[in-house]
Length: 100
Image (cartoon, rainbow, N blue to C red; front, side, top):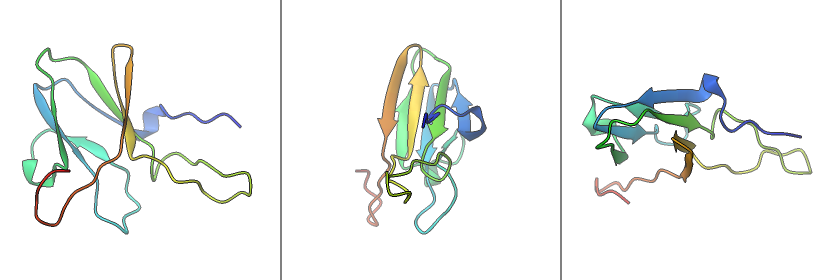
């Protein structure tokens, strides 16, 4: 079964010089997303010095991936895409506020 990891219904975009990637803490059913304004919710910061058009496609909580037995498989949080580059992203945060 083909899987579309680049579903436009699961994407957020930015071409800002800097933006953040966000994901609600578990047990959230919300997909991860790009945020351009509220740095307090950023888990990761993306520096974009050339103002590339960057898309972030949420995978976890947006794209269904099944194991052969029919149960859901684990997934990364999302995929960053720009030009012809794909970066699979797993967001983690520490309670201390330090980035991981």
